[in-house]
Image 1 (cartoon, rainbow, N blue to C red):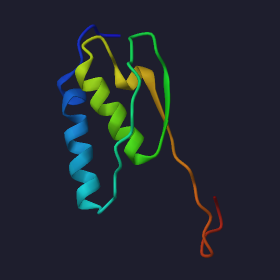
Image 2 (cartoon, helix red, strand yellow):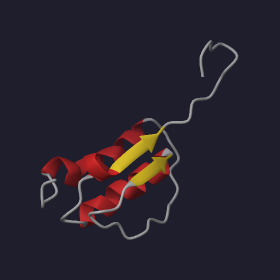
Image 3 (cartoon, helix red, strand yellow):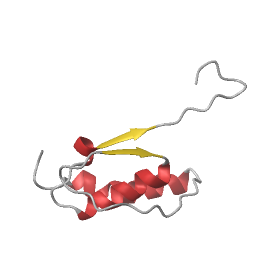
Length: 83
């Protein structure tokens, strides 16, 4: 794990917020605990993902790709064969 956050990770929260806006997603403020370099997170939902990305922007010894797993909930619809 690199000691510094890459420039791509620093821009992630801004990009995610713009994507959510373009997709007309309603995001809510989500509290995020202090994250250290040894923490591992399981994140669910777009608001939580954005909140964690913002928390990682502030940390210099953090790596979002190494420390975060995003869980996507699948919804079964009437026209869907899988869930």
